[in-house]
Image (cartoon, rainbow, N blue to C red; front, side, top):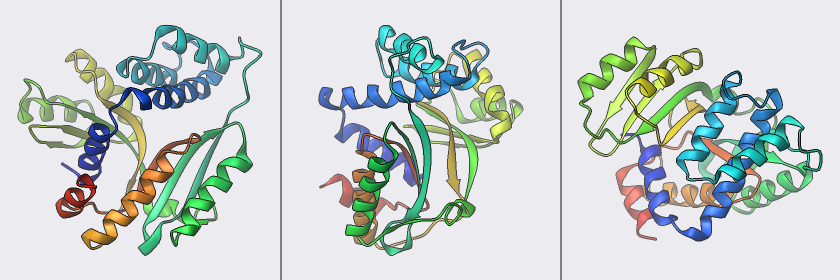
Length: 250
């Protein structure tokens, strides 16, 4: 199981409070609205279908989902205009970051990101300054339940997956962007609803730091993730078991 997923699991456990659910719903609403710009039909708009499935998995109310679709498709004329922006930069110790944001105020979004990074010794970079260190991949994660590693591996590889990692806590599947739908359909046939199903930026090479330095960077990334405009943060930080233990104890 990758450090990223261990870290995500710990964050979910530490932050699994009703107080944070509203923020989760806000991010999901933005994701649905942006996806719905290409059409409000989930059968014809795969990106929208994915966003809606993610919202349902988070128990987002049906009315909220439908309202977000109407806002994005233009049926709700009173909604704010949302803009997708991808930022690139570095945290301290040279750790690369790609930050995906959806905002109604570009100036606010960049100011908040710059404030967090510069005060911690990082910086925002120009477009392309970091992206070359990552590749866009399809990613799925879920609990294995009653499926064996061999059974899952055979099915998802036949569907086009490139790799599968298996542990008693989590299964992770990696595939090309082009294979996203075929792998998703294969999981649906098995009645598996992933906890995460997304296109994400995967680092080509990881950067290793001491446990203390890793924990410092993890805290900065967590601060960035808590910004209202931020949807996703990708990093090439190698999160070790020692760093995770230090992070979880804070």
